[in-house]
Image 1 (cartoon, rainbow, N blue to C red):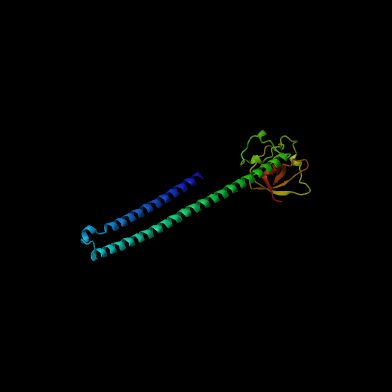
Image 2 (image 1 turned 135 degrees about the vertical axis):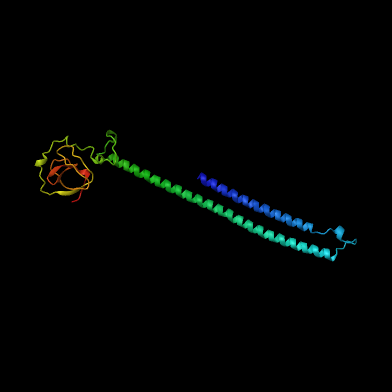
Length: 237
């Protein structure tokens, strides 16, 4: 806003300076025309005879110079009026541009205020909804982890396989309801013998068994079998 005002003031004074220069220029032209007019007046004391009657040649010269001076004065006045009109139009254009800029600036400020007001409203609603969530987590009770770390997708409140009763993986059988195919999203190294290591982009067969944590599935790859985290998988069927 301050930069716009400085630019507007600079343009206004430049146009005002231009107008003053035009006025001074045509004032000098008028002065020169009048000076030539008065200089062209013959000296009656030297040219007229003693009976104070102008000669025919002096009268003709006077009329010729007078007509010439009047013609130059009319031309100068016409050009001055044209320059004054151009200057007036330029000043009107500056005024209209200034008004238009102020209007656009006011609309921009109103739009920004409305946008941020709506953002504030939505954030308050989201905060209220998160506050009512019974499973909300205290982020300060857990160390920060990088978003690009696949382990960040592991549920914080889920029990580790080492903290639960060890399942006899060899005794686990696929359920009667069938199995599903899943695509591995990230590499995963098994923490113990009950887990199955994973490689990104491979396809495995997964299923769940009764009593098992919902954040884990049983995965099979050929003759290999073990627990796999659900967050590392994309279920296909």
